[in-house]
Length: 211
Ligand SMILES: Cc1cc2nc3c(=O)[nH]c(=O)nc-3n(C[C@H](O)[C@H](O)[C@H](O)COP(=O)(O)O)c2cc1C
Picture 1 (cartoon, rainbow, N blue to C red):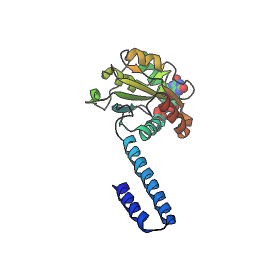
Picture 2: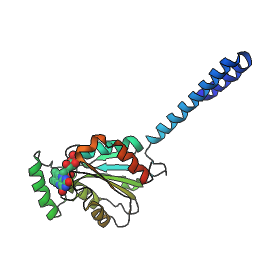
Picture 3: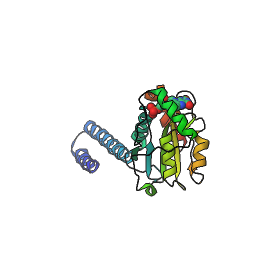
Picture 4: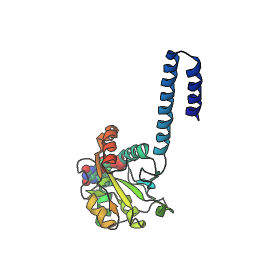
């Protein structure tokens, strides 16, 4: 609408004003067109579908905020619905106590109860799953999520934060949980680097053909 108005205005000026004015108005038209097109693109990015029209869910667990930061970065770049998983019983505040508890839970294949109930999981085509690396694999709350929902047939993108182990066994374990899903290359970001990870995330999303 704005473009159309500017165009008419330009035509009017073309007839009545000198060349210099015409050049100025043409430039204005061009700039307004760029503005409108880029706004439309920004809106598209905020929708819940990616460029291939897949409906996106970003689901993650984060105890101390690192994975949370990455989830928000991904959401900023491609949109989608976001669910932060929370356990009914919170993990201890202290790092060491949490590692001891998590180790026992992993060995016992314990599934901590989650507060979240996702009723419309079937609606999503592309599911981003985010977790801290716990003892070389995905955290227990994410394991509960994977046990609880049928993700077969979906496309899955895993993002992990860690303090040295990278993806560890996460990809292999994810494949065991959902053998019938299309699992894209995952990304691992060091907890201490999450604040500077924007470019790395952008490149990852481009490489896995989502952005
Ligand atoms: C229970 C537990 C186990 C962990 N095990 C590992 C590990 O095996 N390898 C590693 O690199 N980091 C490990 N970490 C560090 C976390 O992966 C890292 O700090 C992560 O960024 C935390 O993410 P969050 O802030 O989203 O909770 C562990 C942390 C906890 C609490």
